[in-house]
Image 1 (cartoon, helix red, strand yellow):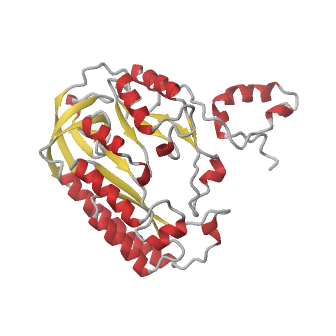
Image 2 (cartoon, one colour; image 1 turned 180 degrees about the horizontal axis):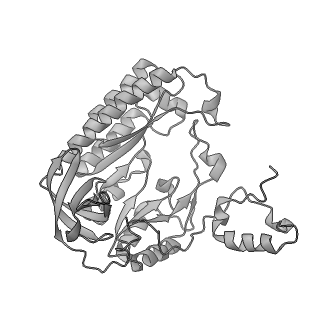
Image 3 (cartoon, rainbow, N blue to C red; image 1 turned 60 degrees about the vertical axis):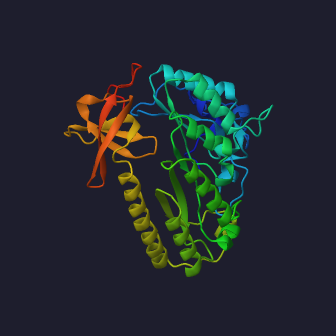
Length: 362
C-alpha cells in the first residue's frame, strides 16, 4: 500500500519515537534497510509506564503470544508463541505504578496462565502473584482472562488467603458441548470445565466467575446449544460475554461449513444474554449486607452526587461522592440493591495517599 511507510511489530512500540525521528531525518522519509526487517517473533520486553491517563486502574502486561491453536483464532499467527516478561521486570513495573498512586493493577496478556513456562528457570503465575503481593503492599491485583486448565490449586489458595488478589476469575468456556469443543480444538472437555468451576465455588462463596461463549460455531446443532445453555445455567457463573461466531481468515474454522443462520444465531445469543443478566442480578443481590473492598473510579454521571466504585468481584457499587476519593481503595458496606445497581457507604479510607485521585482518574 503506497500510503504505508513502515510496518512495525508489536514489540517495537517502545522504540516508536526514535523510529519516527529517524524517518524524519532521512532524505527519502524512509528508514535504513536494517530497520525494515521485522522479526515474526519479538521478545516480550516491558514498556516503562508510570501513569494511565484517564484511568484509576493500571495494567501490567506480563506475557505475549499464545501456544494454543484454537481453530477459530488467528492470535498465534499474529502474535507468535507465548513469551513471558521476566519476573524482575514485572515487579519493577508494579512498584513504579504503586509509587504513582495506583491501588489496583490488572495483570494482562494473551495467555497469562502460561506465564513463566518459557523462562529460565521456569516460573508460574502463582509464583509471580506471591512475589507481587509481597513487593507491592498497597495495591490490589486482578487477573485478566485465564484458561480453565490453568486455574491451579495454588492460585485458588492465594485468592482465598488475601483480599489483595481480587476474587474474580474470567474463564472462557466457548461451548458447553464436547463435540463443538473438539472442533474448536479447545484443551478441555465439559466435565473438566465443570469440575474446576465447582472447585472454585467450594473455595469461596463469593468468587466472581465470568466466561466467554461463542454461539453458532460451525456444526452447532440445537442440542449442542442446549448443552451450553444448561451448563452455564447450572454452574455458579456470574456474568457472560456472548459472541456470535465470526470466521477469521486463515483459520481452520473459516473453512468449515456455516451451519447456523444469522437469525438463529441472534436467537441463541439473546437467550444466553438474558440468562446472563438474570444470573448477574442474583449475584449482585448477594452482596447486600456484606463489606467489600472497592476501588473508587469515577462519577456516576456529571451532575450526580454519587461516585462509582468496583468490588474485587467486579461489581459496581455507587457511593456518596464526598465520602470517597477517586483512585482510592476503601472498605464499604453494601446497603441495598435498587434498579439494577448496588449502593453502599464507605467504612474507612485508603491509608495511603493517592496522587491519581484528581482529574486523571475515572
